[in-house]
Amino acid sequence: MSGHERNDKGGVGRVKKGESQMVLTVNGRAQLVVQDAGSYQDLLDRLAKAEAVAAIRRGIAGAEQGRLTPVDKAAERLRSRHGVEGPHF
Image (cartoon, rainbow, N blue to C red; front, side):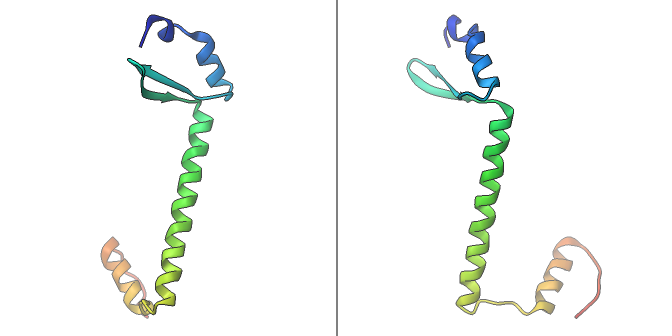
């Protein structure tokens, strides 16, 4: 990173305002992306939602293919996995 990039307060100000992200390069190759915390949180939230939707779709596809687990077996697996005692179905 050049001295100009390290001291570019204007660029940091633009990122803080959420105007853009900055790609920092070394020898012309992208090395880091800098963005404001709010934009980063939005990205994480969108990723979490996309992962949840994908998991739901996999579950629906499995159910449509007959890959289902009876509730008593599923509950026992969860209790065993998490060390929880609870009602038995």
